Structure formats: C-alpha cells, structure tokens
Length: 340
Ligand code: ITT
Image 1 (tube, rainbow, N blue to C red):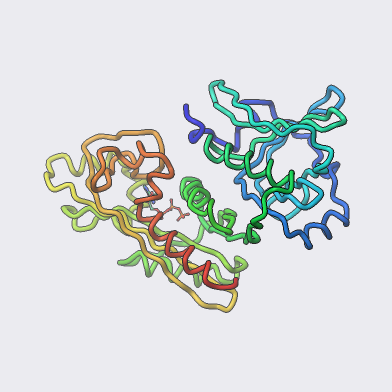
Image 2: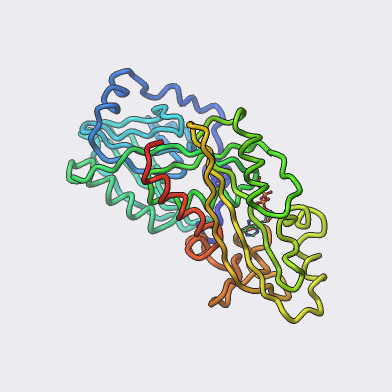
C-alpha cells in the first residue's frame, strides 16, 4: 500500500493507537502567541493533516489535526484549521529536527523534533515523500531564520461535498496555493436538470443561507457518447443504483467507447455573486474495472493519451489532466486574483 492510499482519518489506529483523551487544550495557547502570530512576517506551511506523537518523561500522547504550521521569529507553531494553536515549540529550544522514514505496512515520513530539555515530538507534515522532504527542509530553514521568502496567508475555502474522494483532490490541487480546503458535508438537493450547470446554480442558491461564503460546490458526471451522454447528470443516481458494473453491462456490445468527464465548480462569494468553472476530460470506457485509487467511475475510464485508468493514476496525475483538475485550476486563478 502506498502512502497515498493511507486513510489519514484512521492513521492513528493503524500506527500509534488513538489517545481519545488527548487534551489539546493542555498545549500552549497564550495570548502572546496569538499576538506574535498576528505580527508574524515569517513563513507558513500548509499541511493537510499533521499527526503528532508527543513524548515527555516517558509518557506519550498522540493525535492528529488538520491544519497548518507557522514559523514565527521565535516559535514553531501548529495550528488547526480554525487557527487554534495546538502545539508551540520555541525555536531556540530545538536541538534537532530530522526527517525519518518508517517503512511499515504504511510508509510514514515523520519529523523527529528533539528539544534541548530532551522532549521528543514525532510529527508528520506531509502525505507523501516529496511533500514531507520539502516541508522538512523548508521548516528547518525557517526555524534557523534562513528562509527569507515569507509565504502569504492561508485562506480557508469551504468545499460543500459529501464525497471524500473529491476532497482528496481539492487538497492535492490547492496544496501549492494559499487556499486551504475545509469540507462541509451538507447534502444539498441535486435537481433533475439537463446540465451540470443548472444543478450547480440550484445548489448555490439553496446553500446560500446555510453555509458561510466563500464556498464551493462540485457537480460532475461521465458522459458516454454512444449512450447519448448517459449517465451524465444522472451519474450519481446510476452509480448508486446499478453501479459501475451495471454501466459496463450496458456497454457490453458497444464498440464506440468514447466518453467525457465533466466537472462544474460553483463558487459563492460574500457579495452574493456566483461563479462557475468548467473542466472536461475526454477518454474512453474500458470493459472491466482497473485500479484501486480514485472513486466513482475512475476504475473504468482511461483519459485520452494514457493507458491507465484514473483509478490507476496517482492523485497528482489525475488532477493534472482531469475534468476537476482543470476546473480547479480556473477556480484558483480566479480566487488568486481577488480579495476574498
Ligand atoms: P457531492 O454531490 O456531495 O459533491 P457526489 O458523489 O454526489 O458528491 P457528483 O454528484 O458530482 O458527486 O457525482 C456524480 C457521480 O459521479 C458520483 O457517483 C461520483 O462518484 C461520480 N464522479 C464524480 N466525479 C468523479 C470523478 O472525478 N471520477 C469518477 N467518478 C466521479
């Protein structure tokens, strides 16, 4: 199993055992930290989820949090997605900050931070090797005051979806941006309409008094040429009823297997405006299911120019060519050029 397949929500169960009693409130959360953060010109590092094993005097606690890391001139601070300080370590108390690889059933890259008073923290700050190596290098430099370029603030962006697979794609795609995706799983009604755009328009209107803007919704579907664009806007219904196997059966004797994935992202802003971003990816439907990554129709769809299904590609590869990846690129471009 690769690190990309780790279910981060269960990683504690697998690796360390969950300490439900972990009282994060124990950790530093003093006013002066917050003041320091506000005036902090130093770098921020977005990490999707950091897991911390915290050792002190022979006892340990373990926990995991979604959030980001800030390195101020004096401290290394771990913040959750609401901006609450979860852990703060003084930079000058750090004796070593080294990346280790634990190659068990689930490969994990973790930083071991040893402080001068012999406390030890093991903290994952990346979901895979490259992210972990990069974060370790940059954080280490920032602690030593050597990272001059200060990264811009991270803005939370609510993604309204019940689909965890989509969130994984948003997280990967927004990783290099200043936006931090936060899932809201309200299940809004998807009206019966002839286009994804109409479904998105309705969804944005329905949600506008229920979710604080800015927020994003995502409607997608597989449009198969020989089935007159079926399942298209009915993709979820078909997936939930006959499933991917059912679609394959429908296509048993069909030679023309061309299909297009479409994704429409809807963005609602605080000024009441709505914006849509569309992405498409053409390819073909194969005759059987292949691959264990992705979700939905991914195991039966091969994008044009590739030999692997979406479910056989890495998250990065899928995002770089997929309908959602393309729509997200447009969304990020738009957001980056405005103040929200
Ligand atoms: P939300 O509406 O809550 O976001 P959903 O899973 O219902 O989640 P859609 O209506 O957009 O999402 O998706 C319709 C169906 O198409 C659903 O069965 C998805 O699993 C599938 N689907 C959407 N995006 C996909 C993708 O990138 N790859 C494969 N299948 C996808």
